[in-house]
Length: 370
Image 1 (tube, rainbow, N blue to C red):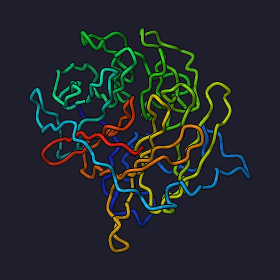
Image 2: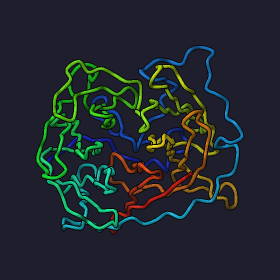
Image 3: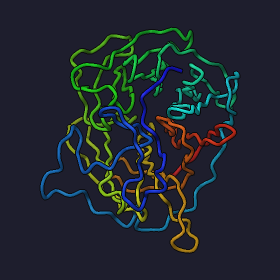
Image 4: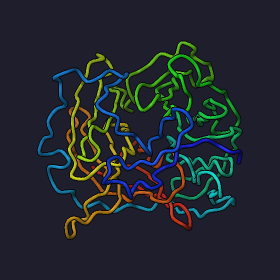
């Protein structure tokens, strides 16, 4: 593939946890990191508003993480296993001598229960049926695709923020290009700062630096040059917008902010104090019922002789009304050097699907924290 400029995901991260935020990031100019690396950048509220003086996130309740021991993780169901390669049932991996190694960048779920994997090394989307078997592939035309999401009508949306600087709209039945929405314009000073693609109804959004979302057009392919903003990620029940930030990575402090969609008022801001240093926020999304899924990467306590830890992701299920913890589960963390954009996706019916990379291939697993 053509030479690219990218962020290096987690290289050297585990070795520097004691020094603060375990992030090794190579940049050309100002570049935001994807979901795999949500940085610890203070207590900003949606839309870039600073936290008002004297106003604090709600105190952790006894049900909050860090105030109790983690429950044993529920069994993680294997959804699919694909080896490395370029065959019909394989996924591409690239480890160049010069440049950053890459693996499948992103994944998403369709309303029909199929998983869509962005296999940018092989220039295609790979579709996995509900049984985990490969159902087919869709070729891509973009030069550096990095994120994929799926609209309610099945339209496939693929983001290239670096070279084509657009979101491609692909017909799910024919694989043909329905439209191409540019991501440059008002509110997006640097397309490299885009950290995700989102669909809300008929509207297509891109996320700026893990903060506000900017509407770039609709599913018909009509661009919106005015670029209106919303204050966070829309929940799938249509009731709120979400934002999360790490407050103090070494101390294990972060918060989640929820804005009521109808009134525009803050529903809650809840702080969570975990018992381990934080590396990154790996997931912030909701299912169709509105349950919030928050994934946090760090050196998790093993429960063995103190202070034994191991890299992992703690997945929390949060109440949509007040942010209280409904349940939690510990999941493995990808520690191989390949760059990716999104390793987790939330299922409409609840639970998550995530990809775990090994030297032999990719395993896709389901997990739940409810």
